[in-house]
Length: 151
Image (tube, rainbow, N blue to C red; front, side):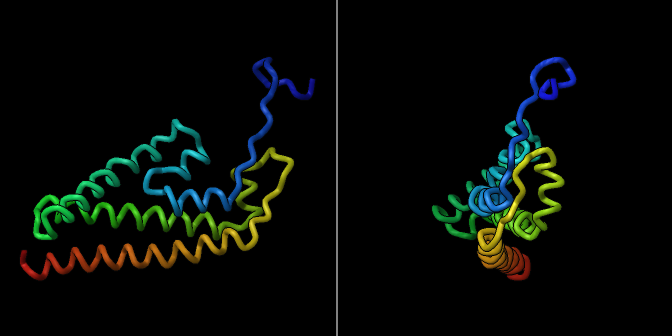
């Protein structure tokens, strides 16, 4: 009877969540909320809220490609893509730098398996820092150029 859940049914085995996988998902698909869906499931509202600014920013990128950076739509929407990318990469860094014991206490409290992330998480953090810095600097350069160029 120790596998019985409080509501009378059988208890589900706790799903183990890998810190390295979550960090990789934030790095590669964080702008679409992939890491949040991995950790919290498909009903995560904040995961879904990451989609609109990313899609709007993607539309701004398309406008910039088609009509140039002077296009008003690109000018307004493109910074959203840079901020979305920067936020996702920042989340990859936060996930990757979380100590294994703290990660397990939060995401794997009932799992028999314990995290030992090693170099995989470190490499994800290094790539995320590099790419995130480039994304945020590019976004700042674009916004400041438009602000001070008067156009």
